[in-house]
Amino acid sequence: MEVQHIKMETTSTIESPVLDIIESRRSLRAYSGMPVEEEKIKSLFEAARWAPSSMNEQPWTYIYATKEQPELWAKIFNTLSEGNRIWAVDAPLLIASFVRTKHIRNGVPNNAARYDLGGANAFLSLQATKLGLNVHQMGGFDKVKLVEDLNVPLDEYEPVVVMAIGYPGDADKLPENLKQRETSPRVRYTQESFVRNKSF
Ligand SMILES: Cc1cc2nc3c(=O)[nH]c(=O)nc-3n(C[C@H](O)[C@H](O)[C@H](O)COP(=O)(O)O)c2cc1C
Image 1: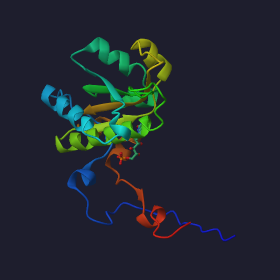
Image 2 (image 1 turned 90 degrees about the vertical axis):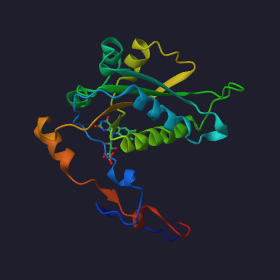
Image 3 (image 1 turned 60 degrees about the vertical axis):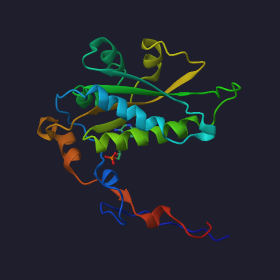
């Protein structure tokens, strides 16, 4: 049997033209203190709303909190890993994203739910970029604590990712190691590494 190896090479260049918001989006860590306007928060969720989903189930659910709601904001913030708390402490908006794990129509487990939430969060992130906002998704949080502190009914919902959102701020205020990551070019595998126009 012939095994075909793919060379996994990376670059920081854009290989083919893409939308400006795809090119400029990045997961920054420095936030300015400026609050996110209510109508912009609504636009973010509107973008998520129009994402495609398996059988149009729309299995995404969000709990958001702004710094003007310190109690709810802290409930989400306190679930974050230490490494994420260092910088997310300045994010004026936190969003916890969940999936409804079963289909509404028949209660059968929805195997596409997490895939669909990822799509919705991608739509939300690109809308945020267009609005001048930064979204930083985080898998580094304590799911058990989030479920407890936000009274999540586990028979219906599962937390997947928390997002820190706000206007970009001054990278110089970050610890040195994060400052470097903030300003270094983004890196991706080349198309050649993951796109095939022939069978394996
Ligand atoms: C599901 C998911 C979980 C992530 N978890 C974390 C996290 O806990 N902490 C963090 O700093 N970044 C996290 N990230 C951000 C990634 O590290 C980031 O998207 C990746 O390095 C690519 O950089 P870019 O988004 O700036 O292009 C996460 C991203 C995704 C999609």
